[in-house]
Length: 176
Ligand code: APR
Image (cartoon, rainbow, N blue to C red):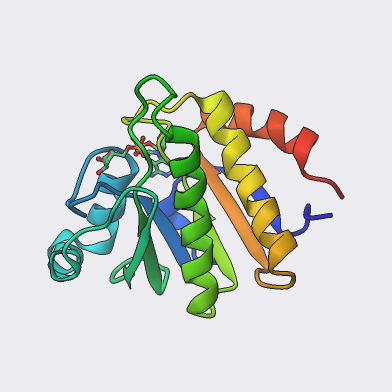
């Protein structure tokens, strides 16, 4: 049902001009980090992006904020903070679900119809990729079920190893 909207690609999220917004796997202080966050800050131009992030002041885990895209080929960056994984019994799954859901909610509010996500929390924050990929795709399905016609494209841009795991889930979860 959503195969024409939810898509996966192996690549670099800073090089996806076809979407209006890309999502950053941020930290609560909205500072430049490593991983995809570092790549996004570098590509956007870290001086201007850091300045806007500092004005916003921070973002709680499971929430999302928006900035301009600066030198990126995208108008906006949505910054969301996924959970740091510890035992799996500290609400990690709920907070990861919330990070994706709140990003989509904010994008819809801004009139964004094409958005690209990285795999949130499954890098430095060590969320298990198997469960993390399932949460990612299921949250997009849930959002589209609740908000029909809200997006034209919800794209996951993934490194090769992550892409393989998402692809397997995708075939099971996303119907024609
Ligand atoms: N494009 C797409 N995906 C990327 C890119 C890129 N340019 N660079 C890295 N990734 C992938 C990683 O391989 C991983 O699969 O993004 C995924 C998320 O990993 P992290 O960036 O480590 O994000 P996360 O686990 O959510 O940790 C967030 O890391 O950089 C800091 O400030 C950030 O403190 C926060 C923490």
